[in-house]
Image (cartoon, rainbow, N blue to C red; front, side, top):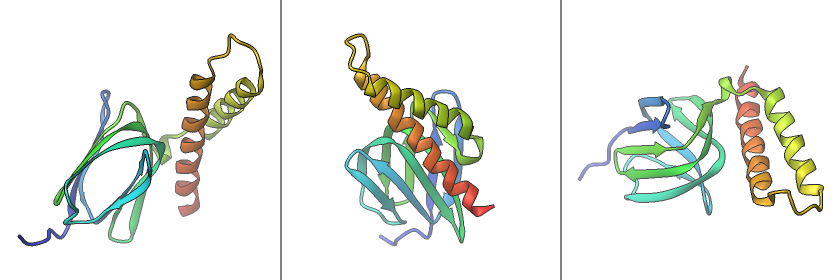
Length: 140
């Protein structure tokens, strides 16, 4: 079997399709850490953690936030199925900063009515959005 020259990226949420294109490389936030995918990658099914991701076509990188989900990798394709995702350019930094502050405040309170796991996940999502947005802003 010959190694493909590119990978077909299929990036979808229940609401929309973020990307369907041939790319050279993809980096994703796995549950056990970030991992990269190049053409010819061994088949893999991975759980994704909320966080920034990117894909590259030539020298051009596109950044996005992925809110968890799954990635199916085969030698010539990466399918990302995420419950929510945003391209870096779509992220409202002020809203993400506000969400981060709210989550941090909730986590600092020692009251039983606070859902700590929900607050922790909100904090992780807001940090992931800010990270993805930061990468896109640095290219401008």
